[in-house]
Length: 335
Image 1 (cartoon, rainbow, N blue to C red):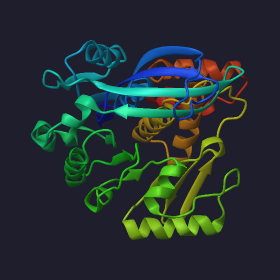
Image 2 (cartoon, one colour):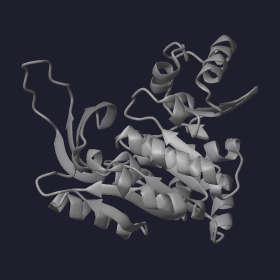
Image 3 (cartoon, rainbow, N blue to C red):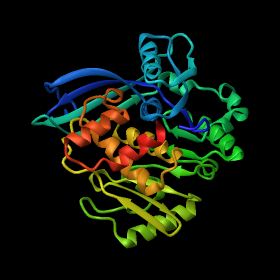
């Protein structure tokens, strides 16, 4: 990549504790599970790691606890090549973030997941701790944000980026109301279709049905009301789409993927998309690339353990007989 091809991620660290079961327990019910594991995660850390594994020069800003989980969360990013010099430690007694992940499975395939996030240190980031970015943010070509840290921090960082002309990607998860000032300072909003419906207050599509022209016009109107310039929306097995003004671009999802665990699929998609955009790809190419990276993520268990290098993604799709031209194109750019 060129010297200017750098990504800044300001976001969360979460240690995922993952349980799989064939049936989610009802209130007051206990069930026998299938498996249990732990894996470093957090939307910010996942996205930072994916971008770094794919070849971007990534800096992470966030906070962990003074505990063994914090040590492991930082080390995981260091091993992936992420610059962690701006990762902070919380005061004594405040734990690192925890994600309690429950996955239903049938015949070895993941069906759905439920996640409870306990923010811990992530919610103790203070405004004064990110003020240094005001004078450093123009060193980066993209800023990535999510909603697992205080909204105030996202607003501050996005305002710094907007003033310096640095594009901002906001992944609005877990879903929360987005202040007008933040919406006006981001370049891309990247929700899934459920999050998009809640944030924009409009119908996206009926379950199992394609998005209609009427729904797209409703989305455009909602974007205009909210002052949103560009929407990058994931649609599960229907793929992904971008909407900006009158331009709508759709790219289908990968077929023939054996889904094992959907955890971090959205994060790998967003991290890959930002890496592709920084590398100079257009929105359509970036979505095609990101769909291929996310497809490998869902085929493996855990958050960060399922994230891909370019070589891993190329091998995965080549072995399945799929067209890998877009992966090879990005590899050629980033080498």
